[in-house]
Length: 297
Image (cartoon, helix red, strand yellow):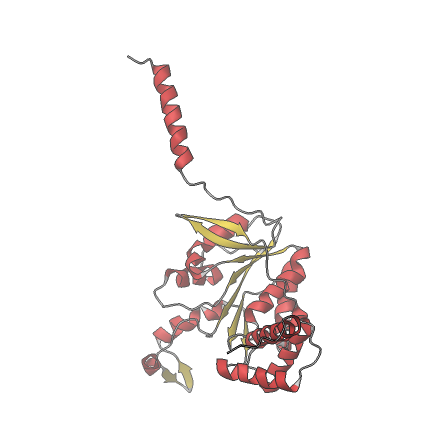
């Protein structure tokens, strides 16, 4: 019969073999080393994952949104300076620079301790855990939520609502939430909900369903709206991005192709302009480096 010592040794070896087969639990990336991070899930546990190559865009590369740039820059400067600042909701036309503006401000103020944590919609239920983890750190954190939209019964909707302004405890003063969305109220609104609107003494009182849907966006202290660009604004952005690729002027053929490019995509915005500039510059450089091909019959 085996003695107890032998049994314990065999159990230790067995446990060691089992541990070798278990997945390693990810460790939090250190915000002192990385300016941009992403909240990820590993089973039921969340952790901060480093973003090794964050976007390097700067404020000077964002055109035709001067008012929005100034407002968000001021709010972010207040924040990194330890002064009162607001959570911000950026809404409006797609491709007009909402997300890029947030990333540009990270690059501007990273040297002053600003950090960004990207949280997708599924990760919003972990907001209390994220805030608890970073709340005592010396850095200043923007929780970045891109392209938000919800259905009314989604858990992330209620979690975000509570963190913004509804919990019995206050969020740490080193955390703000910057969110982007194509719609102001974040939740689809339906015509029948307006039937519950009442007029009392000349004032409009929305119905309960409508009140619930606007209550989340109202908890953001700042709203910034972004609008579609007109043709000249679009072409100005095309010129800028072409110059970044070494093309100093917008030629007649390039102008026509840029307009066709936007028409094919049904939108004139900064994203479309940058995509066109990349394609056009690539074509021009390829034509200079590759010999003309003649197909033989």
